[in-house]
Amino acid sequence: MQKNSKTLGGALAIFCWASTFAVGRPLTEAVGVFTSTTLMYTLGGLVGLLYYSRSGNILASIRRQSLRYLLVCGGTFVVYTLFVYLAIGMVSTRQQVIEIALLNYLWPGLLVAFSLPLFKRKATVFLPIGLVLAFSGVALSMVQGGTFSPDLVLGNVKKDFLAYAVALSASVLWALHSNLSRLWGSEAGSELVCVFMIATGVCSLPFRFFFEEQSNFTLEAFLQLIYMALVPTFLAYVLWDSAMKKGNMILVASLSFFTPVIATVMSWVFLDLRASWLLWVACGLVLLGSYLANKSVRSLDGETVSD
Image (tube, rainbow, N blue to C red):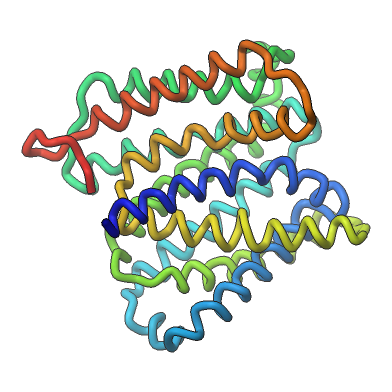
């Protein structure tokens, strides 16, 4: 029962993250990418620590954890976040932001792939097929018939190679973080994720001055900041952390391909627009790919992975 509830929490985290673009984009446009990152991660972490402080001593919880969990899992959490926003801040066009996001969404497939040697699992031939189908659906949902060609992508990569390398590194880091959190921190409480959030906020502050961001705080931006701190940051990361440690990790990782697809659907619904047939094709590809990826991973005794 606990495993099912943690898995359900991971699915809920995906929905929380799916709202990031609709709410987070106007916030970053108003106050800046790294200003918003600093504020929402610091605020989300502080709210989380206040919440968890009611049930125990957080410092004692930190001392109980292994140093490798705190340094490696905490480090990958912080660097992943910084790399994502750094890559976004280094490119200049909307097209490049989409390409950066696509590179970032390699992490669900990498998460599944890294779990094979770490947890002594094996996969059938349907795993790569499922991952390719799912990622194709992600790409189709984000492009939506826009100008997207191999020549255009290669040109952007050559022009801003460092930004694309940073984005690719971020996807590797998050896949590693999710796996290693289960391997080394399965007994660690989610309050430690809130500590990682605050560390992220503190580390992102210097980038605000490096990029010389100008902030325009309005009531709307303030409300967006509160939402981003509480839902896609605090709630989503805590639910994800619990799912990775106690839930069906492979199932949740497979469902993670739906994050940008759900985000696109939300944008169409909230803007009262008509979804194109390409969006439904994308949903079908992600659904089929996620199903194949989840079913293809097995433990070494041949049983389908369910833990």
